[in-house]
Amino acid sequence: MTVGWLHHINGWALALWVYVLCAVVSFMPAAKRLVSSSALKAGGPSFDASPHFSEAAKQQLTQNYERIAGTLTFWKTRAERYHAVHTYSLFWMAVSAVAVPTLAQNIANNPWSKWLITVISGHAALLLLMVRTFRVEANYRAFRDGESSFYDLYRKMLDRPRAFGRTEEAQLRTYFEQVELARKFIRNAEIDNFPSVEDLNSALPSSEH
Image 1 (cartoon, rainbow, N blue to C red):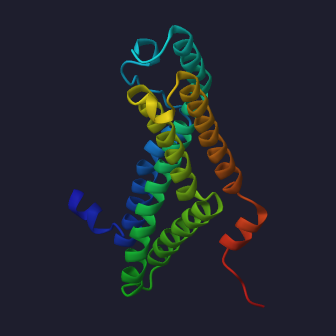
Image 2 (cartoon, rainbow, N blue to C red; image 1 turned 30 degrees about the horizontal axis):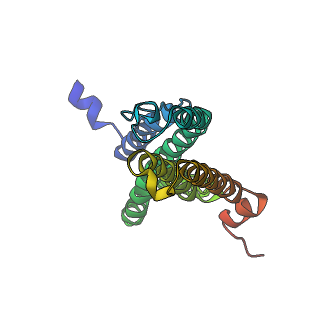
């Protein structure tokens, strides 16, 4: 009886539902990332344990880090969200690029075969529209670069403060200025990468009348 039931299953219909199921299930990690916030990880001894600075300098550096901690959390959260979407989109667009031409050569006089190609193509088109409109890869790189730039400065200040100046005052001034520049860079990148109506129009397939 089981064999008879399997015999009547339409292979194209089964392939369609398997594709939809895989696409939905594989999106779950990205969906979870989109609704959750990232947490900063402890990076070992900080300014309060540094032997290079006076107590007053340690207090200024610690307060500066505490003020930017929220921004770092925001950068990390955004970077991980964009990365999750980028990875998901890249994988399924690659699947579509291979599957659609292959399936088109084997399409049958069966509505399920046409639905399968339509769903795969439509899924890939939606992902491409989203990636282009929201500039997923560019935003991921911007937020990740900003996070890396800050921690490079942070570790450099901890390990080699004289690279920022000969005196403690000069070191603090240069460090704070460079941290502010990193924040401005990410702010400008976020504004430049914010989707606009022009981005949506350019991402949509052009139509000729």
